[in-house]
Structure formats: structure tokens, C-alpha cells
Image (tube, rainbow, N blue to C red):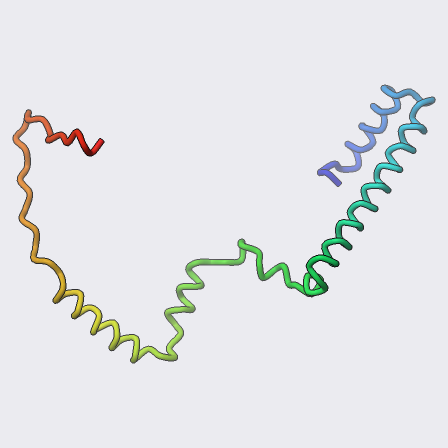
Length: 128
């Protein structure tokens, strides 16, 4: 309950008795009870409205499947790599794609020259 243990609840009750006084405490306790009851009624109404608008499939939905904490990228990749249903076709396709990429690659770029120490770097005013 809001991270409050029993001893803290007793201390808060004693402080409430001291601050509010014994004559006003029943009035505030009744107000708190009405507020909690109204809050529960509003929550039930919101749940019913959601059920009406979305449908009954929302009740049957397994929310644990949608928990992002359960997704481990390493496990997903491992399962994808272990899936061998069409491995030979993928290997042949990958080899063909690698050959096509190597044939279409441009010739090696000319090696850039390093600046002499103390010279300023080139500046392009249109790039900034």
C-alpha cells in the first residue's frame, strides 16, 4: 500500500490524531471512505467502458506476451540463426549476392594524403 509498512501507518495515524484532533477525525475518516468508494466506482466504470469500446478480446488478452522486459535480443538472434528450414537456399543466395556486390564495387579510392604539421585543415563554407 504505497510502500508504507505497518509501523509507518501507525505513526501516520498518531500524527493525524494530533493534527486533526479527536473531534474532527471521524469526519475526515468518513470523507476518506467516500473518496475511496468513489474512486473504486470510477475505476469499475472505466474498465466497463473499455470493455464496451474494445470488446471482450481485451479480457482474454495475455498481457505478459507484450511485456518488453521478456525480449532478449540475443535469444531472438540465436533462435533466428538456429532456424534451419531453408538454410541451403539462404547460403546459395548469400553467395550470389556477395559475388554481385564484389563485381559492382567501385575501384579502390585513391589514398588521401595527410597534411603537413602546422597547416590548417581545409574549410568548406557551404558545408556549415
